Picture 1: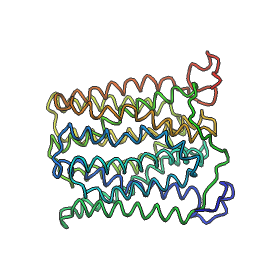
Picture 2: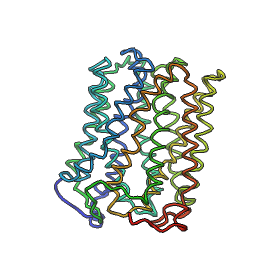
Picture 3: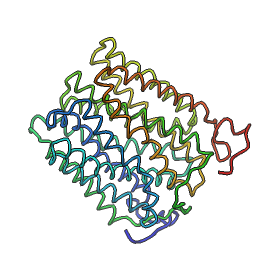
Picture 4: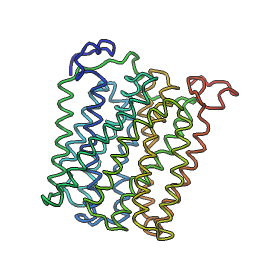
Length: 410
């Protein structure tokens, strides 16, 4: 990947070698490792490492530290092009996933998790930046929905193989981690060698960017990170700890989520493009309030496993609307701010993620329902923030208050 090609010139390349194709290849490659790691994680740490709620909280706190340090991407971009950094990070995720089962104890799992998390979060930071730079604004919601569907399809294949083969072939954690991580690593290396380096039309600022006019985007990112951690850490853990789900059952639940995402994500992308970011985010946050309160009811009132499984699927569907947050920023951002702000936003998104899983791990031991009640409150705050997004966001009109206040210089 030494040749530099502009986005305009890339139209003359073969279809498989164009920037859009690379985005879809990366969208498919990342979940092969990460989704497999996630699907096996709760069973692996409970069955092999004997984790409890406290241990799983610490695991996810360690996992989120690289996300908090995603701002370091800005420093790396001084020396490495974004595209190469993203692919190297993807390779690191695959390599670390491949050796996860080699260290079946708390200390070893935490170290490997840290390494894979560096790869994942740095990849996601750069990938989000490349998407917003390479996709035209008018088509971004639709294509982002298709990218989500592509990731879901890749994950569906991985999960489908787990469901079909885990018990009949008596698969081991080590074999599955090696195959999934190795596949992601191989795809990343192929992309490094096979694709030219694509130059975006707007050079990116290579320093930290914090602008007052982006304050609503920062606030939404912070609340999104805090709220998402509760779901990522404890919703799946609940299915294993409270209802005794086994690997193939957890994976089967994930499969339902993926099929729904493959169908719904492109439709949601089109809906965001047609109706705008404000209505989409209002629907997402209102739905999440209801879902998290119902999660709490599973513990407070003893509601059953069927409801918990249905809520898990609905929860995933609402999270697909988060693509509206990306397109909201794309509309209000200066073109050169996309890469540094993507790094800053990832750091902001993970501020709560660093301490929240560990802290809530202790609360989980006392009152699991209260954890989901707290998540509902966070979704409520996000809803209030979403109401401040204008119908047609743009530079100088980032919030509904912009028309009444002088625009800040930065």
